[in-house]
Length: 106
Image (tube, rainbow, N blue to C red; front, top):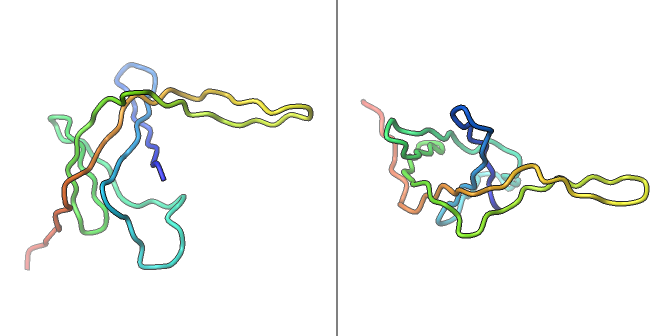
């Protein structure tokens, strides 16, 4: 399941990116993760992405996609179906290292 995030550009129109996680993302409950907030995404001063999920910290990197994706919105009218291009996705943020636990002071 691709996870879409919206990145606000500096002085430019808004850009979108895809987050790619290596491995599995599991929940304690049996319900689906679709439509739920799973963590917080931050960028360091140097521009490296950092994802915090629960008590885990993941470091990633941003890369360009080989082939861009189009985000489409489906609209049905009385007589036909049309698709509106919302944006073109050109970047992905990839997290491929093992998560590091966040440990508090005792």
